[in-house]
Image 1 (cartoon, rainbow, N blue to C red):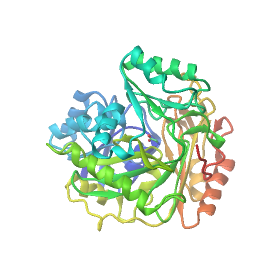
Image 2 (cartoon, rainbow, N blue to C red; image 1 turned 90 degrees about the vertical axis):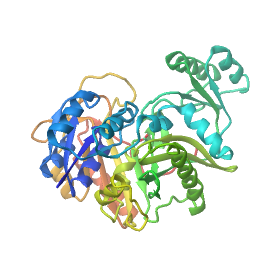
Image 3 (cartoon, rainbow, N blue to C red; image 1 turned 45 degrees about the horizontal axis):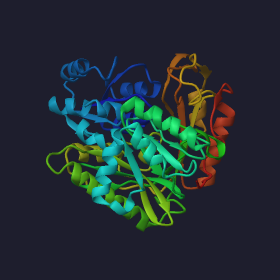
Image 4 (cartoon, protein in one colour; image 1 turned 120 degrees about the horizontal axis):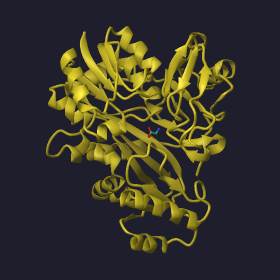
Length: 433
Ligand code: GLY
């Protein structure tokens, strides 16, 4: 078996480890023992090391000592820090963009500049701000709180604040924009548009691009899309690969932009492979661009990887070998349903004491769902503890009948999830903003 290094330690990486372990010996460097990644590394006869995946000397040594030939990374800050660049320097076949290409995610202003060049009709009116005066001038365009503030750097899906949802008055929005400006020297103020939000993810080997089934993410913390933004509290996907409000033509519009963006990023040298994920709004004026991510979404990766008919490890191999094709990248035509389980304080407080919880994973899985651990480690028989105030584990089910898989996931939640934890009760409903 060939060997593959996986960096990153969320539930997204857990599903990648599961799928890749069907074909590769999996190797991982993780800051803590993610129980799912651990399981799949062991199952594949691979090896893991507890350590800092940002430590380039450590990663290099691990690659050399274990004679690893492939590397897959889908975590934003590892991509920004150039861990794919390092894997390339070590001669590995890679799945994921270099730091230069991942800039399409880690710089919101860069992404807007690129889309402005490639598809100006998809741009929402915005102001790229680098000074207090520019901020004042930009906000003079708004009579009330109907604008959006976007910080410049990576925020794990938690930085964008929308007037009327995350801030109630123009003054509050202004204060947040000032905070972002002071933190990074840049901030974006954008018109608030009305429409339905969706994402399109494409997989690429640098030249060939395949659109993945569309998913619908639930970024807000509480039911009915109330509360602060999060990394995603749940995610659904439908058998036809679309959403009820989307047409194939809508998706093509987004896929074309993604294809053009990949070609643009790779115009001088191969920089971008892996997943390019676009966030969009369907509005009365057409499809509008929100942002790019240079990686699989989390939780979206769990829905999408479970929607492959061609084993994902085979598709990833085609990305490693730069011979990806639509024919060899087929989907199973099933619905997928996922709920993330979190601590009660997730996204409400930045630092909280570790939360201990119980979970009988085998009992849950016997009820037909999959469990993917994220920011939690095992401390005893059916006992776990959070390692940060982030998402703890995801419960996923793929199947032919949407209502059935939804009921199955919620049944497991009601029967198996420790009441010290929290989750959204309304995954599956779709709200308009
Ligand atoms: N679910 C949103 C993200 O991965 O950024």
